[in-house]
Length: 281
Image (cartoon, rainbow, N blue to C red; front, side, top):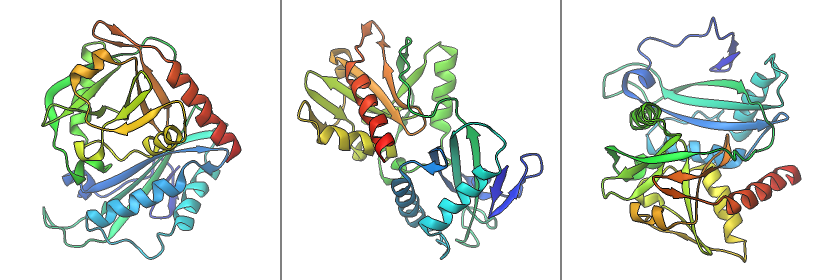
């Protein structure tokens, strides 16, 4: 089932206008959300990121768009899902109503919500080989827009095609200053000795919800010094560990970059703490 503006439709019957602005101009935002046992994980962070992004894109936020309303829209959709899974990947998309060309006729919005079942409930560590490379055909232009989850993801699409064609599991994106920004599907963290680094938002990385959870865990840890700082490609070869974060998969350790192999000790400990917080919440 798919929720379109509060109306539930089967995936075979659901449709959006051909002139949809998200399709025509990428004039849309989305949140990728994980649910567990009918509960939305990190919902407050998702909600406030969406509201801040809509304001930045000059979208009109409906009065009914309260946290409680959108939460109920997601939960209602899950209740009609025929899957036996306890965990779902939910995508909430908001797009400006059709009309106009580059200049929209209105700033009012429509929304749709989809849900796909996930195999595992808690986050699992993928301990198999995970090989990455830099994607250097195109670059991220750092700024406020690059931190948002908009429908303008052609760079990620092309990077994913490059990774598939060259048998990499993922690629790291660079900004116009040739600094590391993030992975194709999540934020990047680097471990060297007792220092944990991740690129700052000013370098162009996504303002990830899981990124925020991981930063909060590291800031409370007496074992590590956490910093947000620019990461150069040269630092990757010197790192002890690299891992990617997103809300669907949690933590993905990187094991190989060119001739360098990495440990996964910090990733394993971090994943245990993350799952513990989910059990206690």
